[in-house]
Image (cartoon, rainbow, N blue to C red; front, top):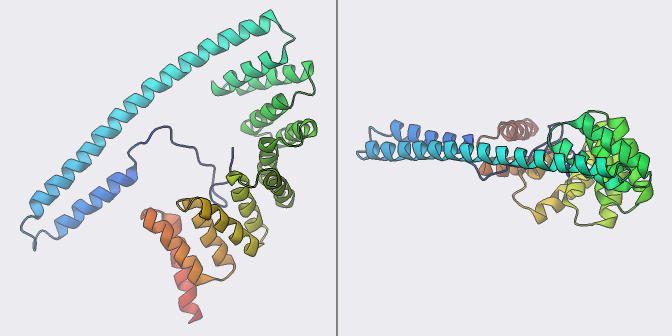
Length: 287
């Protein structure tokens, strides 16, 4: 939950669990196969090259099948471990029903199993036992967000912060929730508070830039994206959003450069291609 949006007006990104073969790998190799086929009339060894590239495609497909099988096995083991943890934590709650951390820990296992309502119930029980338990408020805020209850999430993040003003995760997620409610000005204040406590918090800096862009404060938004890119030059989402920011600021050369750099990293990024086309069209019309 570190970033509010990966790209402005685009949904959340989930981290990849395994270093896996992507569709982009296949597309790039297949494009090379097609390219070799188109050159076959002029290159006597092209048939051998096509066969070699086709073998690479087959090898990648086999690798993907293998990794998919490994992922399925790992997921089954993880589910089994979670079930065992749930049973043990339920037994702990029965043994000591007035122990707030046990209910909080059980809620975490239930959340991971997808039983969100049950998780919320145990978190509310933990808060009944100990109203000043910031972790339970924070976790209930997270579960409420997953249940698409942003107002409830906001309330519990605020309660966590009332009990622990330096709770950076709660403040960042409060900003994310406020942004989702369209309250970007308040979200900006929340993200700035996170950065005051933790200047290196990459998620808050990225989220702040996004909120500033939505508010039309393009100069600071651009600066914030550049700061993110200084720390991680390979952050394609920050570079894409920087291009969007330059478009809004009518800095079309800079926008074209940013989108071009995204495309260099991912030639199949259709959004970046569209952004580059918009920037080039604007430059042509201006000339």
